[in-house]
Image (cartoon, rainbow, N blue to C red; front, side, top):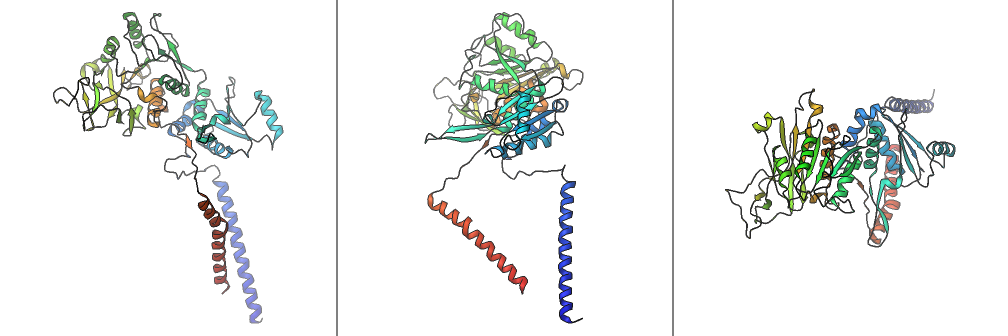
Length: 491
């Protein structure tokens, strides 16, 4: 055999081996992909974890509620919709983390009209837009319909143009899931007999509070203590929102009787300008006192209208917030919290501080009405300055009595609840407090964050540069690299 023929056969042999290696490598990759089909980890590389489900949603998906009441989610939507991919990704994450608690189906009416007609007939729909359909199935069927328009928030620009500003898919889906698995809404009463803030109107703190309760599948209903002798049996809690007037003796008696029943829960959001004596004495008897003071800045002895505060450590309600700081807008007074007091421990009453003003920055001024008020070592307080506290009545450490314990949350400031002032950390705290009071401490966590949409504004010269970069420079660069590699292999 000649040298030329030998070289030719050798080259063919090498090519065959290379082709065989590529084929085996491809088969290996396919087998690995199939074996890892059920294990599909996702990595969110954004600094704020914008594409990951929140702690709250993860805890909800892993709770017994969802395992007992599995949910079928049907997405009836055009796959060419501008928001379809974003909704699809987050729904697939719900399905993956639920451990078979959620089953997911996608149906495009344009590609599969027969299946779409079946879905429309089953749920008696008249669709005018893309929809999410959540269904519990089973003997007691509960269904929720979510239009895609509810998953987005639009705003009007300065040019009077309507544009997309926020995606809130996770927030809407999680709150809907909770309402479906729990079924009937719980009921909490907003006490209106001693307050002027009982009307829930646009832009009010009452509206914010009502929305917070609604998202936790709780219906906040008004109730006056003046014309009843007992709290209704269906009450899952009471809320006192900025009380302006004191309770009458008969009203206080109704409150005390309710507090002495198992699983009672109370939320007090106090007005820093009002001090109702009977209500204040009731709270003080449980180790928390609203002080008649104001929080002042140490630096210049000025009234603090914005207060930097930290969430305390060591308590389940603050589990995911502990150590984090937030800014409370508006003036505030402080709370005295008698933690570890022996007389309260003997009564099985445990007060716990929840929110503390940033140390070494503020002080408590008792003579805030006087001109040129200054810190007085003998009567003013430096640390700690508390804005929020919780009270537990009963023994929650015992499995026998834990379910019958009573819970209370007290806040000395209310301005932060205004819709234009409330911050994400405060929303999370209020949701945690609402769930803790409702006996759902396992759902405490950092809630969903609305996903913002950002637009990069470029001037014409910058747009032209980007076009040249993507249409000419990058393709030419890759072509040159390819020619360089080909030349090396050829030689």
